[in-house]
Image (tube, rainbow, N blue to C red; front, top):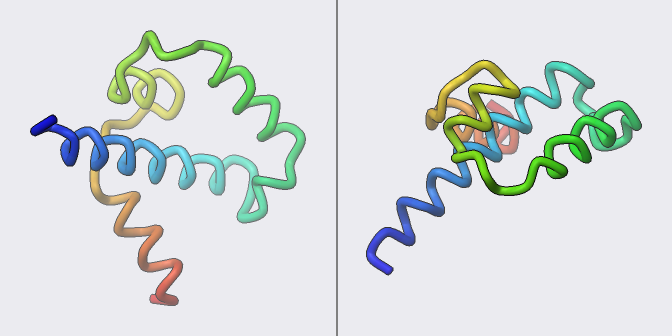
Length: 79
């Protein structure tokens, strides 16, 4: 599929945006939060009927962007 790379990049942007949102809403150790777990279960319970753009707009009020991916790289690199 010629669009594989584009799909992968969009998924990465969505993951980055959701991760930043989870960190902002539930703290840096959001993965330990039962409230974050409940939020994720509700999100996953919706299935795959929304596009990445619509999902992000509905749940995080944002748009797909490489900003969150860049921010996460900077966190990992210690910048």
